[in-house]
Image 1 (tube, rainbow, N blue to C red):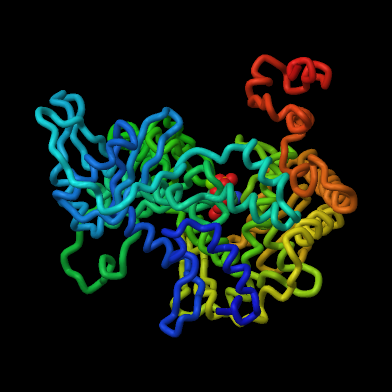
Image 2: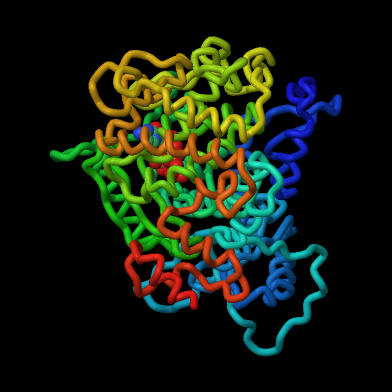
Length: 557
Ligand code: CTP
Ligand code: MG
């Protein structure tokens, strides 16, 4: 409604145009008077969790199994939708959503285990496979719906993406396209909630009030296709469960021994993942970190997962980022462009180390958007805290106060979207802003929305918005911070210079989001060699990345 009032209906249109129809309802919902409104994080999570509770993922032979699978399942339950995908192993899967959780229970009751081997114990899990029919094949009538085929796991084809970026009319269009084509799609989100549900099913019988929730970029609106899946296992007590009036109380079990209870729990979690969660593989236990985690790969969905225990602050952080990202349609595309640039400039790296990661980088974008010339795009977290009501009170582990306004419909329009610049201007201003930022003395705080004095001499200081005594970029080394400073200056220069001249192969964001090592080669491929376009990866197969221009030319010949 606010965007409509401000004449920004085109932003909404763009947002909706680029969104799969099935998840449009998650972004904006209509009031009874027809006006649109923001959907809160809690509402989206509740809807996605409910969706996962009535869905299964079935391994099949191919897309051709659709009619048979649909016909078979329809005997037990009403189907609401079927989505097909392939994992990188080339295996085919269908995610089936049923109309209700009761429907799903009927299906689960009808499942069998496939081996009579006593070493393989049966277990209820929403990940199944579809056995070939024995004997005479049943004939099923044509399904009353079409199969939706989507890439749930794989990332967008880079060459195609760059070709599309080349053809854009404006840099703003390029930034929007980069976002539309690389953001996590509906099936990607569904699969993430399915893995959470699968792990939850296994632990449900062990803990009183267990929940496994995704957090981080899988759910905060800043996730791209292929991003990792951060999961948190919470074992919270409801008010009813902890009521002092109830006379019969469960005997409980205290953790004894030298190690912390959290570590002990995580050890057993890792054991169970190994023993009881089909698809979970290649487990790593990282139990001595501030937040102990178990890492695993989920083979049916191609997801890299990090599971931690009772760390609700991560979920509240996701809620905060979701809210800020949803306030203005420019926030997410701009953040995607910045994250993509940082990846291309090798400022970020998939492995943990002395470099900046996507999370603090996202906070840097949000901070810039609180400081845009001519008025802010985003409000400060302080404003959201001041406007919080009783319903927004959340206290996480260790008494951490995570209270802030959740329902962005209650935020007065003058608190945000004051600056009207397009994405191109914002990206350039982002680089200029950090080219001049005093990293030496100042810390970045989205709570205050202004640079504050650094409490220590760490090279980069980005305040954790929910635990303000913590620096989320404390791992960043002096050298990496210097590189960040250098790269923002280079990017500002490159983008500005590119705006003046003719459109060439590196025009707009192209020069910023392509890896430097492959850029020269791609250029050669584009200019007059597109008829024999080969994968850049193949060319590098037997060469050093720092291969000379001459060698590359020879290879192309
Ligand atoms: N987080 C945090 N403090 C940190 C690092 C992470 O609170 N120092 C929380 C944030 O909520 C973050 C989540 O943990 O979103 C997951 O961290 P990470 O996977 O590093 O970042 P993502 O936002 O998920 O981004 P990516 O796509 O790179 O995984
Ligand atoms: Mg993550």
